[in-house]
Image 1: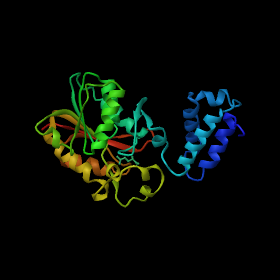
Image 2 (image 1 turned 120 degrees about the vertical axis):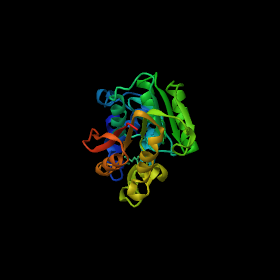
Image 3 (image 1 turned 135 degrees about the vertical axis):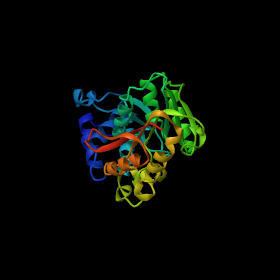
Length: 281
Ligand code: GLN
């Protein structure tokens, strides 16, 4: 076996991945680092270091899976969100960097230490567990309809050592009837069912139930906004992630439903990404 150096291995992998991945360079580096068990800087510090035969075989196998389209997060079984490592699988959405703005917005609301918060459609648990990590005193509840996602969120809760987070199987509000919260957050499915982006890239490997909603993607956003009113304490906040073109419609709906101080926050790509309002009763 001709053993490749780190630099040549990355170069080879980028050539393999460029036709099918828009992120070939970073994919190649992340997969290589996984095989050699090193941090990012190692690639630039030790470009001439040779891979062992075993590392090289493993790397070739991972690159082949990526070339078939499998998301890097599924290959590694892990994705970082809010600088925390989340276990991921194909039962739910892979956490997105864009969603970190929702976490940041929630933290900036200056809520009390004993805040009761609810995350609807928690998936991996990314939002709820990131919030619980920053605000350990909050009474955080996270729900998902999909049983496998509930199990996954519980695994992440164990791994991140955040036992205070309550995780329930629930069809939106079904398991929390009669309860009230100071904050309700959600990153629901919001892509239109006919959206052409669903046929390309990593989303092909994610469940449609986590991605798409009826009514041009607004059905779940509107359902949550409507029903959240009976689950919010007076002065409580609703905070919803949505698509980058959906801001005006979501704001109009929140206002129409009687929420006050309705506003939209942009993500780090400067796209309108989440909208919030306060419920004064
Ligand atoms: N932002 C994601 C995407 O565009 C979708 C997330 C969602 O539907 N909640 O792929």
